[in-house]
Amino acid sequence: MMRLPCEVVRDLLPLFAEDMVSDESRRLIEEHLAECASCRAASEAMGAPVPDVQFRMDTAQGFVKYEKKKKRKLAVTIALITAAAVAAYFIMHIALLLGVIGFILLDGAFSQVKVDTDASHYSRYMGEEAENEYRNKWGMDESIFPDELTDDMQVLEYKMVYYNPWDAQFLSYLTVTYSQSDYEAELDRLADCGITPYKDYYGVTGFSDEEDPIAMNADDYQGFVYAIHTPEKKNTITYVELIFCNYAYDLDYKEYIPSEYLPLGFDAASDNPYEIRMRKD
Image (cartoon, rainbow, N blue to C red; front, side, top):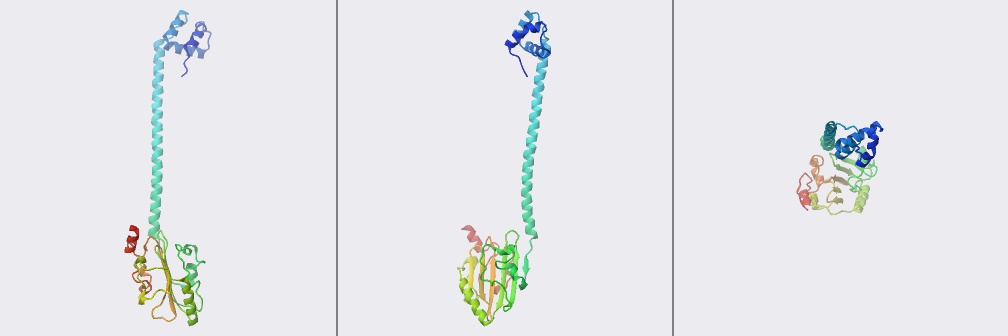
């Protein structure tokens, strides 16, 4: 609210006394005189009309009260809007968090174990030409497996198991009988693949008949890809991959593979001793 300085009011008093000021100037001078006793006395000395001091003071006090009440209402309104905005922010983030958790739980609940035993689908799951979700199996090298299945290979068994509740997991095995010459050539190829250290990973102590695998790619976290001689079958090789993460399978892998194809001592069930030891380390 504008208030005229005393010096300005004193200069205007002669004109005010002669009623020669504008309505707005008159209002401002009267408001000043209502609050300033010194200027009011000077105005009376000039014979100017004296404003109703009590009325003016009541009006000014009422205006102050009105302004304070309006400010209190504004402060309450701002506080309510702020509180509502903060509540909405937290509700939105809680909803997002619950939505993500719900998605993960539902995705895990509705994920199904995929099993394929059709050898004609082999190229969908194995090698560089595999479909996207099967191509990069946690970086494990699958070159131990044949690049492709040809007509001169006698496939005795084939199974691909895929499960992805939240982290992809793979289990595959392939048993092939070769002609004598092809068998020898395959042994040479597998010898070039080599055998990486594998004992003590997931409790593995070796393989049946105390034989080493023909070829082995082992990882202390992701699992194994290997080839072994097939018991009691001439010129026959079985290829196996056991690929997972977090030190355990989320499926009962023993349901999907003959026990004779697994390494001795292999344990990748949840909370297996190897997992417990590695997590402590």
